[in-house]
View 1 (spheres, rainbow, N blue to C red):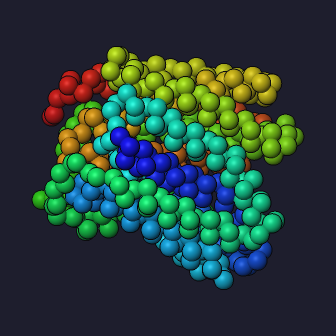
View 2: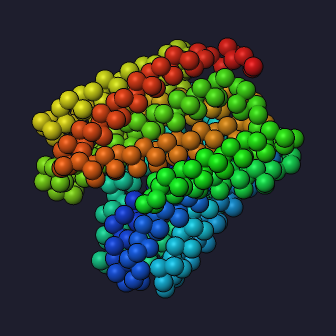
View 3: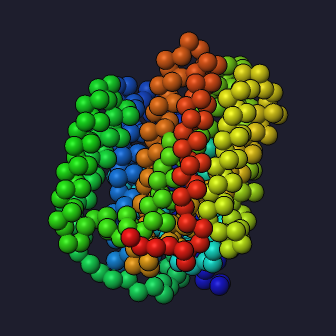
Length: 441
């Protein structure tokens, strides 16, 4: 267990640098654009990172089932760190965008592989507590990240937001060295043709969320996915194993998590903006509201493992869905009149459901899967969460931008999320109660 402690801290640091990178960039990017020029490329600092880190998630899962988690995670951290060094020395916007892509290629493996290692190392009871720690890191980083970004920009230089990843990356790799994997990994054929088709199709669909001629990208991405399915049906060793979709537990859990991330999960991105513009609150106070979700998340995810053993998956998905919908209804009805404390409390309640469902969803993706596809199953769910959140946030952004003011826009966002949350309630009743109740069809 002593060695596992070092591995655990390695995974914590991995999560920390992923979370900080996402949040520091929000503060520092305007200064970077001023110094390097190329305002027309501003959005691509984020877009290229999102594309690279999202599309590669299933590939990391597949490779981890073949070659082991430790090796892959060390490679992912190394790629991320090299990308960070290159970003730090970039002297033009185009070079920075290319290097952000390299950083994203590493980031794509860091979170899913950490989750897979947690699934390999720890019991179901402990996994909920560990995921609570990881989730708290993300929540705290959303507040600390922008402050840290401001500090580097004003005191040192924006390049330090990337250089800070170098010592952190080295410590992460050192913490992972003692980890000895007990699982037997089976080398098999990698369907690169399938990965290429899948990657291109998903990239086009994600680009649709950031481009003006979105409809064209949606059509091309959809055609790409159809071609991918047709090609994969004839493939002996498909990129996405057929057993993932024949397994009712994995299929229904993943479908649930996709719709869940399309609904209320993305709303927290806009609440600080709403408080700043609609309620004229300070940046600090509006950012602090996100602590409510972090607090709730810890209460929801910490006991999740024990609750799974006691109550099963189905009942927890149903309860989590109802908590989300009821708290979401409160947000929709009272968002424009509610006090700061009232909003904090409702978001804390919603945070409980986020924590519960993300923990139970991750554990379900591992426990419903056979050992040789556990990595692929875990990474597929994380991939679908990313896709759901990206599309959901884009739709919410459009609703806010096309509203008369931020108050009406926010109400529209909650109405959209509320409608989708009823879909998640229906889906929650279809999830198997126990791992043993699975029937392969």
